[in-house]
Image (cartoon, rainbow, N blue to C red):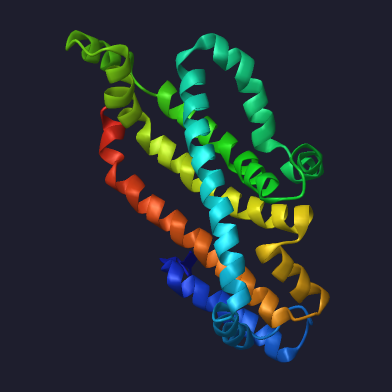
Length: 251
């Protein structure tokens, strides 16, 4: 953030927006925005509740399984498109369509296919995150210099060794960028899935708070999800910086 020509750290930007939120809440201008101080108090209370712990455990399980499949599938699809021209022509259009489509509209279809349960929520997480991972992996593979592959072959590397010892590491910066973006989309997917599929876990808590006009608790739960998504995204971002070296090996 730039203020009066000077670069302001992101932390101070959060303080500014937090102060605006607190002022709007104290003035009672909009009933859906309670003071930030009240939201923070509710956050501590919500985080200590047993029903939140149970809902978080269910959501984290679905999130972990879904992201596991999304990362594996996204990297596979991205490498396939990047290495096989036919696969790029066949899959490229569909991957781009699903990456930009409003996937929330597909959740009712998933309910018909997989039922009202955890499986539908896991599939929702996969659909929300796999495509961006595939696209970033594809971009990373496409940026690899042919000379790097030729060098690996000259040292006697087999096709499999070339794939996981050379090409994977060369494409790793873009893969991690895709995983970071996919993780953020997956958080949105799991909340939407739990709200529309079975109103369970965190989705049930969101609906309870909104219908009862418990706005402090509603925003507290929202902040918890934001912190969760931002925390994981920041960790992957740090890992991206650690592997930036491999981006230079593609030249």
